[in-house]
Image (cartoon, rainbow, N blue to C red):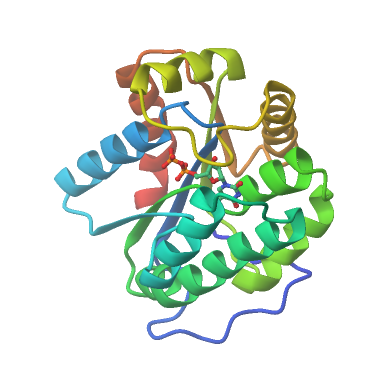
Length: 224
Ligand code: TYD
């Protein structure tokens, strides 16, 4: 089921043995509705009697909350490589202390953003290079890849209209220019095209209930 990336060292064995749970991630640009879809999937799985851990990056742990504050809200400059390392540090701690233990207990982890976000935002958006950034995340996580990644795809201009309607101040990444977000979107689409088995790509302009049904359709066969 879940792939461990071949280039990465394999993780030390965890209690209960790896591979029993299910790891589902949601990806996409800012304002595409990931949080809504993650919540709807959690609700449905919980109704099925499943134990779900819903989490996010950055900021899924106490350490992560501190890192999230730096990467999203620091007022001065954060150099692109420092930014990539901060996301990777958040991820390393999160996967080690929260996600792998939950998977080892046989639980379902639903996660808002994972390594594909680093490849898209730092690799393509900040132009650090997709392969290098991917390798950094795989090192940080000892090669853990999701079973399913749902990409909610939306034109950045439409996503920006949604964010404007929210009336919240933009964080450092959201405040980036349109061409940055265009690069992020293109990279997500290339990642999905390269890994069609892991990815489910959905048009995020569709009604939330339809999207939720499509996500359930992809996850349900994996629950057996
Ligand atoms: P997110 O929590 O989805 O934002 P919000 O809660 O405000 O909707 O993500 C925070 C930002 O961090 C988002 O702009 C994407 C960015 N990000 C990266 O640049 N690299 C990463 O590896 C991750 C996980 C997020």
